[in-house]
Image (cartoon, helix red, strand yellow):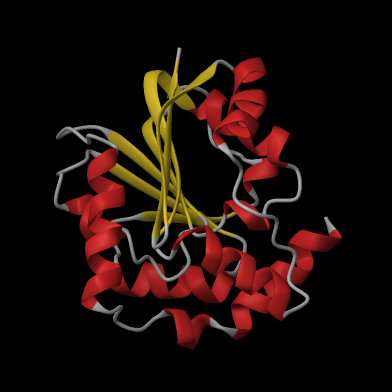
Length: 195
């Protein structure tokens, strides 16, 4: 709980920094991340750790029936509500998720998985929220090395991005199976499917 409180304060202070256009190279990688999900029209999506909502316009291109977006930082969510009023945005920690059982087809955890202290509980809640056959994507548009540099640069809680075997260990008990894994210098994308 203390880690989540620190992260909330940290990201609230950075809302202005995050709510800016991304470079075309980063946007291209974000498009690849969203495309990996194989979204179909009418599916429901949850964007965990949405920040200022960078993925939302990319998700909308697939015509989902519903986009839910959650974040710890209320200033980030204020940006999402202002820029994307059609999205149902709410404040929560995925570790204590109020999301109902089997409500979404796809969950994105972009550029935030390392910030989760209780990954086992977060994965359990994500699996619970997914419908059968639903997909969970853990990603970072700057890759593993970028996350490692962030870890060394400050006091924010950030763990390294898990290796494929570490994801398997987290997911097996909650009914998720790793179906794709890309760990490239400037792009990290792992997708798991709910059994």
